[in-house]
Length: 265
Image (cartoon, rainbow, N blue to C red):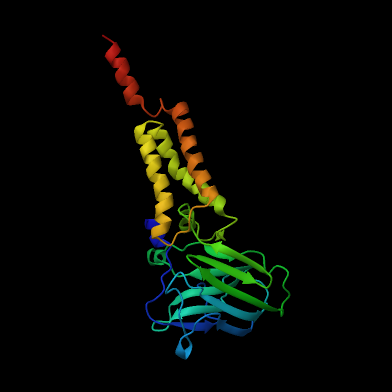
């Protein structure tokens, strides 16, 4: 639940202003031209944009821009800013050869930066000066990115995405990096298998973990756990059982010493 809250996007209650070429988090500014930028769905008066109000609606931004030499720092082509404070709620643009989406989240208040959501390697074949069409939109709690004919949907974080807060310089696209979700969850579940075993308390703890993997996404901004996440949960429990058989005696010396002491008389 805490992870879901930390990774939940923070959209302001007031209006959002649509901005072209806003400064990036590292201070860089996109050097190309943004030829067109508009909301693909509803827009309020005076350039204010409604986004993030109702997850069931298809919020969308569309843009045409000219390609520039790749920069390793994030250079947004567009952003949604709080109309009252000018604080960015959404930034979208190229970083290296990728198209990146960065949202303001609750974790930012704790100086934890979630790994970016990316459409990878879509700019690797673009020539400087090419005119490109891109879009970003939301479907439920997941996000989609497109550039020309390439698109990816279902971008977001699951219950196994705690690593995304500890590795802010890493990339994430909510798809190809799901193996990190499985590995992270396996490391968290391993102690349950080791200390709980296959007895009642171990099965009960494992049941709680499985229930959390199902129920927490329904109550937070996390996405439903994919198959690889469940694979990590089961693998971590089995690894814990194996470590219990191999090293259990070493990690419980007090019980063994007690049994020997009772046999001495």
